Length: 187
Image 1 (cartoon, rainbow, N blue to C red):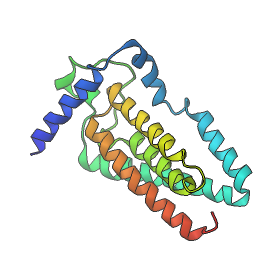
Image 2 (image 1 turned 45 degrees about the vertical axis):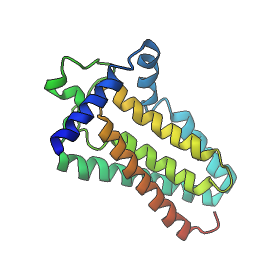
Image 3 (image 1 turned 135 degrees about the vertical axis):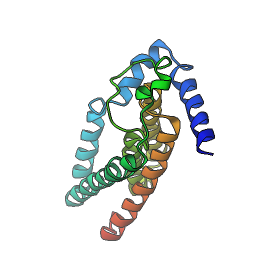
């Protein structure tokens, strides 16, 4: 069973990593996974929360940071060392198939911390703001999904890594939003 999942995962990885290869994606996808590229968005969220919600805005930012930290803790510190899956860009059986678009790094692959963290943040914000601003749903999901897709495209994660990260992040974001709404029911 595990071998058939691995085979399926490698096939889908290669279809995305090599099969969708083009000059535009080769330029765009490394940017999409770069945390510095998204800095203006993070700054906007901070300023928006403080300007719009005053003192409660600081609580939103604090819980958003806690959501991120929880996602990173669970994915990078608990699950990755336990599973110990090698990144596709470090897998010697795929060495002839990898297009090196970004440095591979020596970290482990399962689950994707990028996917976990960004889905956690997106779902937290969606749960918090959807009742007042419906576009947060498609924008938040698209944002987290493009970052996750970019992880596969550049060759640092398998599709199952980012899918599992997305599911884990969704659960974390939803849970943190429920906790936050219990502690701050006025938002």
